[in-house]
Image (tube, rainbow, N blue to C red):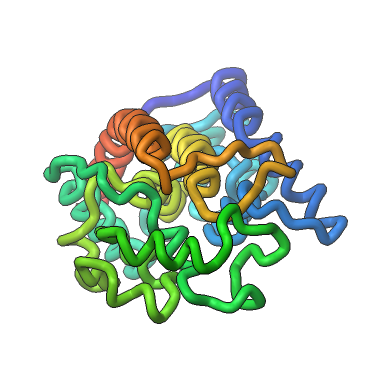
Length: 289
């Protein structure tokens, strides 16, 4: 057990909070005014980690903190031994243990595959394919192309989305156009490290391991997810220039090349985060066993 004195762990907690607090404050500001941002609010509405949970810091398993208040600073899953506070694995439920082992296997499965970069963000186009305007997810924003142009473009494409949580939002007529059929139960066999959504979901798998892993992994995954979401929506058929988002026009050769270039950058950035997450999960598993 490594002991962190009060100054050290408070400094780490503040550093973590400082990284994510601007995002949290922006979301809370908009929510209080019934405003919605179609790009960044996704990080708080699609993902289930609440803003207060994201801000809260944990060193993960194997550390003891001096001078910490269990309730106001750390929350549940902690125990006190004299002047030291540490995580208590006896409070981890059986469901959390199953999730821990499952996420571990998923991270290993993804890492074992070569990255594939040929989807070009068509999942966002498949979500609007042959839908009436009233049913579009972001109907308050115009489309960059008219519906007929979008439908014709998608009819000429080879959709190869490997991510279940993207495919399940395809329009009914778009789903049969995907060359594979990833499902919840088969995601272990489909997810690969070049996929934008796989790398965005590092944030989800990291926060599902909270507080048992270092919060720095969660904040790093969150910030990567924010950058990926930016590309995700810039490459979509929506016109978000009013919000300052210049489109990546994947309907052109130049746009597809640009998308693929940035996609590779994000895949490279995701790799060390995935490695740290896997290492942290394996450390938790070693304590469970």
